[in-house]
Amino acid sequence: MAFDATNFGLQSHANGFRRYRYDTLDALTTVDDNGYINNTDDAQNLKVGDLVDVVVWATAVRTGTIADVGLMIVYGVNASTGDVNLSDDLTGWGVTSGD
Image 1 (cartoon, rainbow, N blue to C red):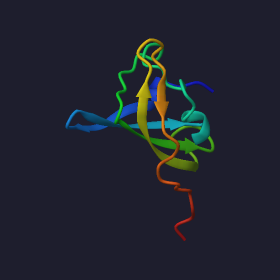
Image 2 (cartoon, rainbow, N blue to C red):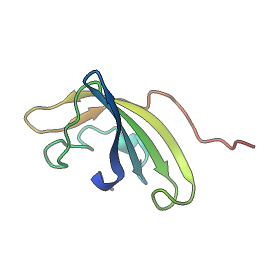
Image 3 (tube, rainbow, N blue to C red):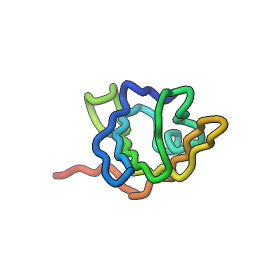
């Protein structure tokens, strides 16, 4: 799938950096691909140092079950193409039952 800006939102900002949440059906390894988010094509303004919380849904976004979660940081933005480079998942979290 492709980046869907309707599932991407600003959570907070401080000291010039921002934290976003992104809900998707795409795997974390897809989301952290170079250019998955493009500032120019996707009308975003991500900057180096911004954080992105990613929630991967197993079914429809924001309903059903969560398949995975991750925290990524913007470590590069290509000024000429707009491609955003997100880190690999910083946390290594996995979804486990709370039971």
